[in-house]
Length: 155
Image 1 (cartoon, rainbow, N blue to C red):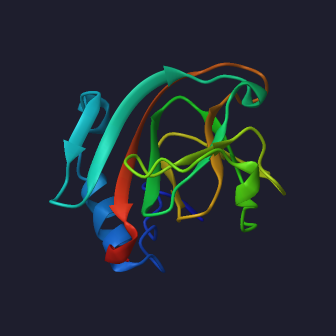
Image 2 (tube, rainbow, N blue to C red):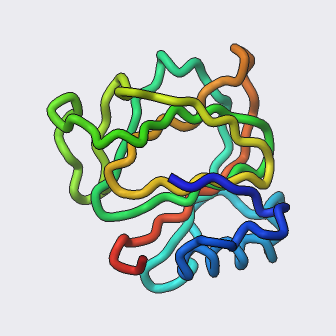
């Protein structure tokens, strides 16, 4: 997992080139003007733009991916994301959905919580559990965010 912010002038330092290039491109966009839905960035890389209300973490399931990494960028609002750097016990997850590349579980082992504010992004690599869209300090927030899906073989 990597956490940074597009408004940090050094956000690209240490990032793999493909992630740095994608984030540099995102930094040129009028993020607020992006329409909800899928946007292809290349033949293999795409992003989903969405708006929703955050909810209590206990009412959500955590996800992980096998073939793609996520770059999750918050555009508006604030959200907590529960995460873990511990390799997951996959027996605690439901069946893998190959077509959509995800598995779900109600609880993350050895979790930490990261709060994202506008222009902050988090990169979740394959097999890194994450539960986005959670309330901050028990207060729901209407958020706009995007998630870039990058095939792991590009890293």
